[in-house]
Image 1 (tube, rainbow, N blue to C red):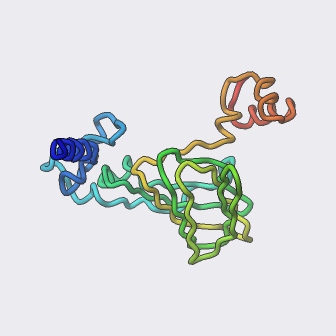
Image 2 (cartoon, rainbow, N blue to C red):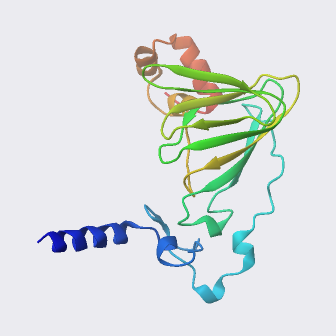
Length: 209
């Protein structure tokens, strides 16, 4: 019986593993659906070296609402990371810009400072952690926790990001709260924000109601 249980557990774990653990790699077939375990593998005879290379890691447009830009190298840009449990991105923040409070439900994040100065932090139910980062500093943001990055320097700031998921996703608190069609009265009541301020933020983030 013990041997049967061991074999069952091994089979269960084997079936739960990603494709990359079974094969040398599993380049994403982006024409197919993206499921909980990632994309299906491209046929090996269609894989090329370009599936493992991303050449667009350049500064993004920081003229948006947050004066920040994230240039992703996720599975949709770099199909070779499919099934490997990792991805990357470049973060550029203009002077005075910021990445608002957000989370990655399925990924931890590492920030590697390259240029300028960024004050970053994350929040837990019992404490808040923040640090002003300069080139050469590295900070980790645990999976699922709310975190932020603010350019606290005198010029542009640049950092590289690494994620523990090929498709880390992001939930930005500002967009979730004020980019929806819930009644402004309800949001005001549940956030303790002034009704007029809620209406102003909804107008800024494209919300209705």
